[in-house]
Structure formats: structure tokens, C-alpha cells
Length: 167
Image (cartoon, rainbow, N blue to C red; front, side, top):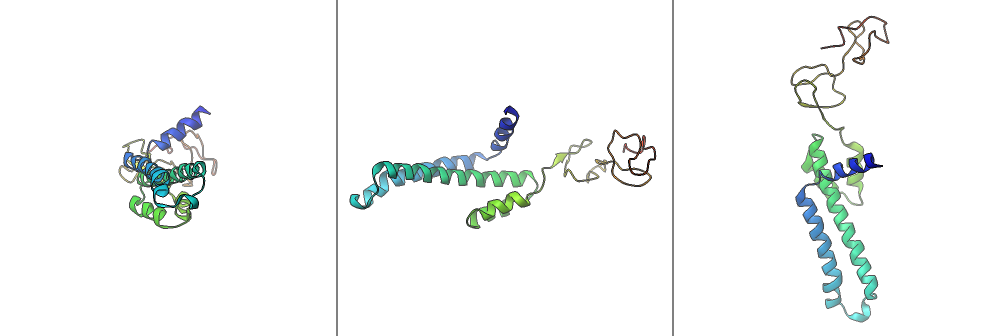
């Protein structure tokens, strides 16, 4: 439970402060609209009861705040993954009915990890670091298939790989 909770908290910390401030302002604006402006400009016989109006304001404000926070998350996460942050942010804003959010979460790239040799960000599927040439996924010198660093012999061809597994 604490591991999943701490992972969720770490993911939420990437939301930029400006997006969090916009979510708070958006929630407050919806509350002001439902509590002050709508009762002021609409005749009282056409309004729903006051408690229902308050509930609608809270639900609408929470919905707007959640959309703004999620949009901020998409912006920061796409930047972190090496994707075009502006393009993805515009897509989730402009494509209706949450299709933009669904598309982002289905099509996003995996997180970049630092190269063990030079700390340059590389994809988890990269065999070599593009900056320093470090073999992040070692391969068998005989058959060329990828192997783990702790293997003593290749599981595909059976040849010894003691020295070949290290770059």
C-alpha cells in the first residue's frame, strides 16, 4: 500500500505549479458562478433549490480542477518522456470527450532511463547509448542475440560469454 501510494504521490508531484494554481482558480470560479452569479442573474423561481445548486457547483468545480490537473500532468509527463509536450497538451484540450487523454495514455513512450555509463537519458529498449556507445543490452558474441549480464553461457547457442557480455 505504501509503495503504490508513494508512487502515486511522486507522479502527482510532476504537475507544474502553474497548472495546480489554474485548477484552484478554476474551482473557485465555478463556485463563484454557482453561488453568486447564477442566483443574481436568474429569477429565483427558475433556479433549483439552494442545496442542489451548491452540489452542482462543487461537482462542476471538482470536474474542472481534475481536467486542468490532468492536462498539466500530460504536459509534464510528455516532456519527461521526450515527446512533444505542446502538441500533446493541445490534443488533450482540443479533442472532445476525453479521447485526447485516452490517446495520450495509450500512445505515450516509455520513460527514459539514465545510461549507466554517462547518465544520458536512453529508452529502456535501446541496445546502445547514442551518446557514449555503452551496450545497455549485452549480446552474445557468437549468435548476436541479447543476453543478461549475469549469464555465463548463451542460452541460445551454448557458447561461453564471460568476457563478451561486458562492453
